[in-house]
Image (cartoon, rainbow, N blue to C red; front, side, top):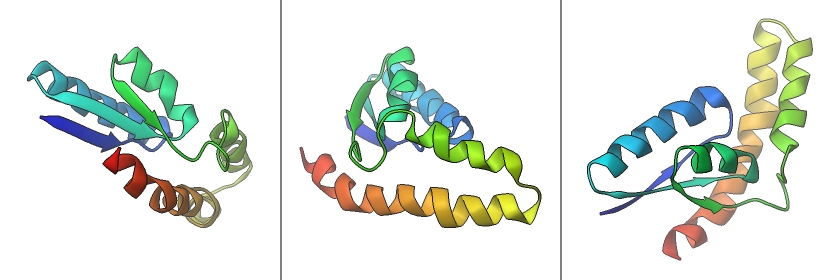
Length: 104
């Protein structure tokens, strides 16, 4: 069975998704990780197929640059910034591109 997994680029999201995909692959499934360009090295290191999306909006290193802002925040500011500036953009880009990518 071919199984696609969407991996958000922060390591706290990406590491469990690549572990899940490796387990599925070990059970004989074809596991493919869908992610923004910054997620590709993790997919390749886990020996998984990778389908990129959002290259224009979130090119390589875009996630790192955006997350660097979090280091200057504290408490609720971190949650507010993450939800309004980071996760919302990832969700918007994912909703824009993933339906088409899933059908390829």
